[in-house]
Image (tube, rainbow, N blue to C red; front, side):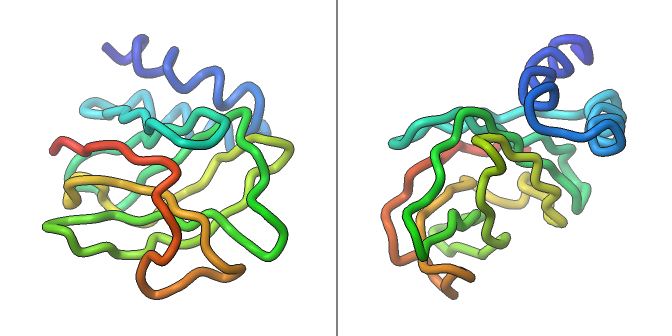
Length: 136
């Protein structure tokens, strides 16, 4: 199972993470209980979250992502019982993303990404462009 999870994130890391960051994420992935949830999206690119239920650390990994429009950022949300909580904003680096998120996605029903004004907003205003259900 660990090999399957490692294979699922290997492509993300090969394209986007530096050596130290790659080692850190691979060590995280190798731990028992690690899960991967792939986002579906309305925009170009692939996105996944790697997490372990009960731990306040996860990684969002992406490849082939298009840049948000000028003056905009992607904003990551965890959503539980319809209530969104911002997990910060991000922009891909040459289409790639390795984002450390200090949150436990398993406490949410869904993770979603919207496109918002630079710096983000307190509640989603833009349409959801990526989303994935989360299982504990």
